[in-house]
Amino acid sequence: MKKKSITLLLAGALLTAALTGCGAPSANAAGADTSGNGSESAPADTSADSAGRTSKAYKVGIVQYVDDASLNQIVGAIQAELDKKTEELDIFFEYKDYTYNGQADATTMNQIAADLIASDVDLIIPVATPVAMVMQNATAENKRSDGSLIPVVFSAVSDPVGAGLVASMDAPGSNITGTSDALNTEAVFDLMLAADPDIKTVGLLYDKSQDSSTAAIAAAKAYCEEKGISVVEKTGTNNGEISLAADALLSSGAEAVFTPTDNNVMTAELAIYEKFIDAKVPHYGGADSFALNGAFMGYGVNYVELGTATADMAVEILADDKDPSSFAVQTMDNGIATVNAETAEAIGLDYSMFADKCSNLVEIQTAEEFN
Image (tube, rainbow, N blue to C red):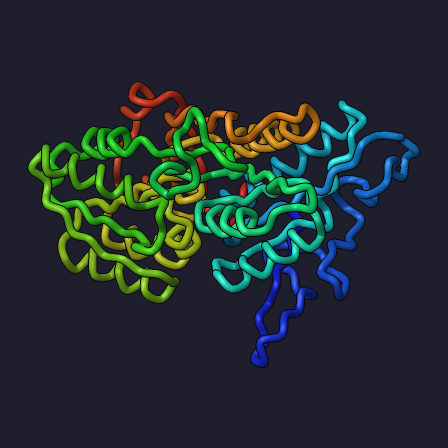
């Protein structure tokens, strides 16, 4: 996946020559991807691309919250689908010069929003809740010359209503819609108790600053209260704090640990999963990348399908002039359990019963990125 990032320097100047992520290409001084990979590049203000097609061209901004396996999957799927629609519809969707990584930094994300607005992009796709909120606020405050707002089509927002992004799932309102990876928290806990019916204490590990965690953590507490299970909460906002929180949960006697679709914990998973393995404590996460990065299980949606659906919505808004305010937020099948077979063997936990309790059971091994 090709993405550029904005790095803050000591003097507060912004330099966009550095790219983040594994295998990311080099960029020119303006921060543009110059690798030559991805879709053919064509100026969005012309009516023909480099292949000589005389078609409409649109500039699409893609802004990823942070570098992690699931979000990387989503962005890759969005880009692939935009390439596909370029060929199918003879409409050029130019994203290559407008793809950014927000590095989980509010100042960086706000600068990216300003850059995209100054570039007069036709639509913005923010990936994950924090960056969606930044892009929505920025576009709401900056009308285009014709008085309209830049459409925003978010991806991987767990609770769009709770985050204040949309008025309702069916009628979002304003200039925004998108796709949700809302987590079925009760289903995760049902699997947890199926694997170990005798659990007495569950740890909750999350970043309290992530709006995406709020509803799932509340649901987890309600479930445990109903079942008579004790809850221990530990939070963190960066890798160091999350590592200390994991240690604290294990010291408190947690027999299993739950994390919702929390991007900061997901990013830290490779650094903490061995702690849980050594303690023989399964870590259940709200996305398949948790399992990819060493956790016992990740539960939720197929993020390639989510990214593809997001791109399709963006294309409908641009090519078919669909109004985002009345374009219902899409949700995906939430019943995929992804189990790390290596971790399951290391902690000695049987998960064979999961096959009958979810829509799909996927086995995976520890890696940094999906193939």
